[in-house]
Image (cartoon, rainbow, N blue to C red):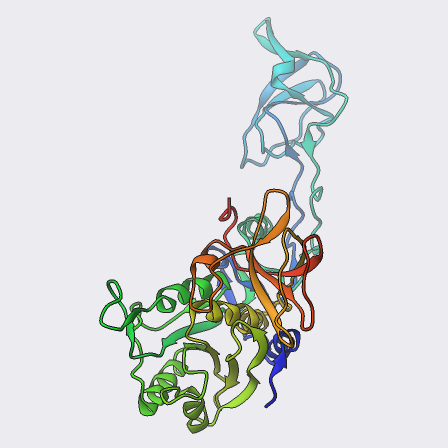
Length: 399
């Protein structure tokens, strides 16, 4: 299989990953899922005329004789001519109401044992009409909408207990490399594994459910161990994300393992720097394997290039969008390859390239907002516009 351009690789992976089956998910568990069907109202919103204020519901001309009260959650009787009832915010407006008076604009007096309510009729009606926000059967959000806390609250307000969404992709991380340590500082020619702890967090931010052991131990650098690890992960996951072994060196066993398992490549290498030796493949049972390089920055490039569009497709979302940014400094091209350059957005709105950009480095990535995309055969100059492939950051994370 020929290496693909960065844009083609993203489109190919996304187009090959149809959405996962639908499930009915309780509202409390739906945050971050994706609607598989339009969200339509089961009732008018509000479902009935609702008071916007604390005050009085009155009918006819004042002063009005006080004749009871209506609290939220009660079904009131009709208000009589010349009378007023105390009305709480959120309460159903009684049938026959002409006006709702705000309590701060009224007064009461007692005449012969009768309480009278005094006040001026307001210029505007201080209640919400039934169906003011939405009418029964109206579409609020279409399919492929990401469920947020606000969407959950809206769904609850119009009567939903569950939402029909695409099942979250299950993902497991496998780390290859006998040289990796899982605790303590590097020593004795061995280095600390940085991707095993980091990748599950990235995958969760991309909407995946991470499965497998909490403590990720490196897989032994032998072909049988690789085959067994991938096969075991495929029994639990929709996507197996591996790190290292994507080249063809003496201890790079990913390609032979995929061959032994009967995998079909979807993307085998991408014309991008850093991160060139990356891949996606499908096992005969439909499980995806995303092979990321072992160098941390290259692995992050591969995450943005292949894993983000893969998970987006499985979740029922479009290809992750890039945005346009203006560069605050020159970013050189990488010849025939797309260059993904780590950048941080400045307070002036410009994107500035960061230092510590070696494939094995994470210091620059840890400070970055995303990657400036410099297409093949180009050098990007300060002041020019380029695409920005954002990292999946939390709101306010870069402050």
